[in-house]
Length: 306
Ligand code: CP
Image (cartoon, rainbow, N blue to C red; front, side):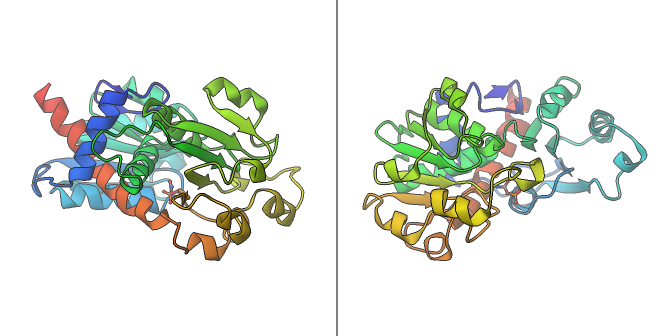
């Protein structure tokens, strides 16, 4: 999970490290000036609302100074590489880098070049570790697993465009490390049977599992990565894999509905369910701020104390 002081991937999530970070976020008793005098650079070269704003707010609430850089207006437009951009920001004395990029695994390459902590804020279809932490915090609080962070006994359905989803990959790694069972649900093109190699069940009929899970985590179709190509109509997708009110009614009494956002309402989820009693979607956003505070403290202060 942590590679030195970098947080890049949940593929090899360590349950003790994950539990420690979740506990730090859950306690939410950060000293307000713990990062005073520090600078956090947010390098967002792919669009974002939740992750970008919450990293900024998290750093500011802990007393850090925040620098925001996006593709538009940066020297990336003149052909500079993201690695050179990261090295340039490091040379100016930033204390941590938060990077979002369209290029899968580029954060791994950058982490090998910089000495300051790097937090992956989403790289292509590869990983989005702090989203998975926000989701785990949400599940832990919803099912009162917030003392031991032991999710054994919980079955989580990740539904939709799994193959293109960095959120799904990070959640599979983290939730399995915490003891949850995962079932991946979607059409063959979005959930190939080979994904069972990740240690998950693979199902192509949502109706066979919707009444058996504690968590339904809905994903949007990532049209920007070509996922909708050849799929047919979004109406047909909605009929087969959308979380309708009828399907929500068949879920276990205690089951919750999640979505990392942004939602395409009416496609993977209907308004009544997104805004209904089972929904924890806005909790996920709130918890994103807490886990990003915890991650910045651990990355920056943990480094100083190691
Ligand atoms: N879940 C997520 O990463 O949302 P944003 O793209 O808005 O940051």
